[in-house]
Image 1: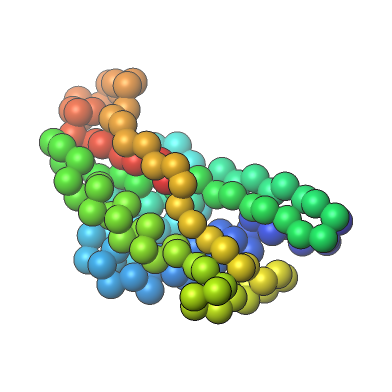
Image 2: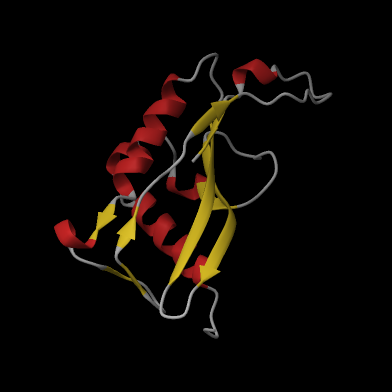
Length: 137
């Protein structure tokens, strides 16, 4: 068992790749791509949320959940941002080489699955929740 948390290494790599994506930065400011949970204070934003690591004898798999928030009546910008995220996070060692992280080497990184929804809970802040769609990547 390693003495580091692989999901933290993955989180740092995800943020670095996302803020390097011109397509995503055109939609979401870099300061709004962050480790956070709950309803965001700044919109649009990408929250790098929950993580999970599965340890095996010689390797491991680590996952992270991203929450993508936009204030818009539909899902157009949200879907565009998710498309940019999918492209930014694509790593295939056979095509582009490995991704070297602080404590391990990543041979494959991909986005799966993607779900899109709108918040079901209304706050008492007079904000129209139908105009806050988000995606979970």
